[in-house]
Image (tube, rainbow, N blue to C red):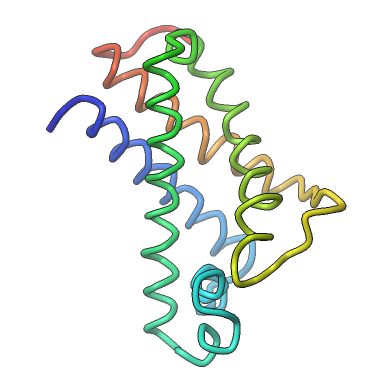
Length: 152
C-alpha cells in the first residue's frame, strides 16, 4: 500500500473509531446515534424506521466521512509540510475545522437540513473532534508520510 493511502486509512480509521466511541458514550448506546448519520443521506423517516440496517449504514457512512477528512488532511500535508512538522497543533486545529465543516457545511446541505447559523458550540463535541479526530489524523499522517515518529 502506498504511503499516502496508508496514512489516509490509518488516520481515518483511528479518528472514526475515536469519534464513534465519543458519540456512543456522549449520546448513549442506541441505534439512533448512527441512524442520524444515515438520515443525512436517506432522510429521517427512512433512517429511523430502518432499525439495525440503517444503524449499519450510519456506521459505514461515518467511517467513509472519516476517511474523506483524513484524505483532505493528508493531501494538504503533502503540499504544506509544516502540517506534518507541527502535527500536534495542526491536528488539534484540524479537529476544529472538521467540527465546523460538519456542523456548518455538511449537515446543512444534507437531508437533515440543520441550520447553518447560529454556530453550534458544543464544548464536548469540539474537544472530541480536536483530540479524538483531528489529532490522530495528523499523527498518522506524520508517522507514515515522514517515516516515523517525530517531535510535535
